[in-house]
Length: 369
Image (cartoon, rainbow, N blue to C red; front, side, top):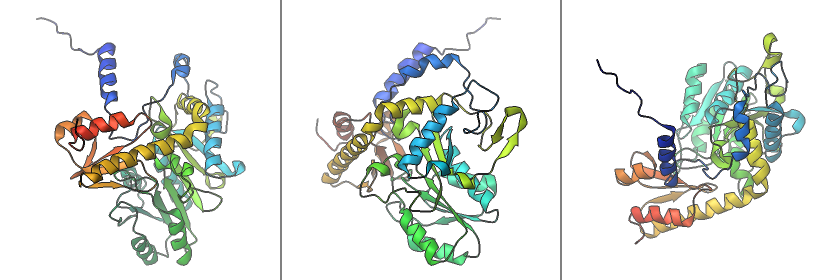
């Protein structure tokens, strides 16, 4: 009986494939232009941020001090007083959404969760996981929540507390729900028991640097929590994110063997990602506005080229997502386009430039070679 080598995989082969696939990547909101070489020496340590980021705990091989600095940065750009700010670095935007929605359920056990038809699938997942009644609200044609439908749904259930998911950059069209309009509806209906969770996976890092946008401002609006992805705008070699919340709303449970409190979704938490995010923010925070405006400028350029050809094209305000007709399958696969029914989109990020976008436009048949 002959033996066969069951594995034909190799690290070199993987590196070659990843380099090739990273060159033509346009469909997902990931900043591939990051530089994390400074954190490579940390890979020899088991960095585990067990328990609450604000409680040092018994396990000393952690990066909780870096994690707290990350939360402080986000508290600053969202105008949440440092003394009232709490949060942690998550594994991804989905974990942030799960935490924010669970926080609302813990505050109001009999609440109803409201989210638009364009909300991220993790919002519906949270409703299933935590057994929260979910009411889907119609979206406008461009992906923003339909405010009259939200008003009607809340009015119908005004005797129940509300958990409201506000999208700041929907998955498909990049639409932004206007939090000021949501708050106005709650006020008009005299609903006092509510928790507003903001899903700001990508848009949460765009809005603070766009002057005409309704600000994500904890001091102005009764925001309860916000989730932002770290591997999207900021950029990271591994998925990660943050969740930020008002400290007074956070519930905790003492865990003796950790020497800390249980306030997070997971037990063990990646201690490397806070350093990755901290390093990226320290290097580029003074450039974030420029990066946002440049991505928006390139997105408008791409949108204009498609619109000039009289093909369908959509770009929402305060977004770098461009929606267009779904192309042939080989283009879809080659550029890793995100597709939904008859439409596709690209998300312009920091690793894109005009030359790359023109190459895609040529393959779409919009520009001549």
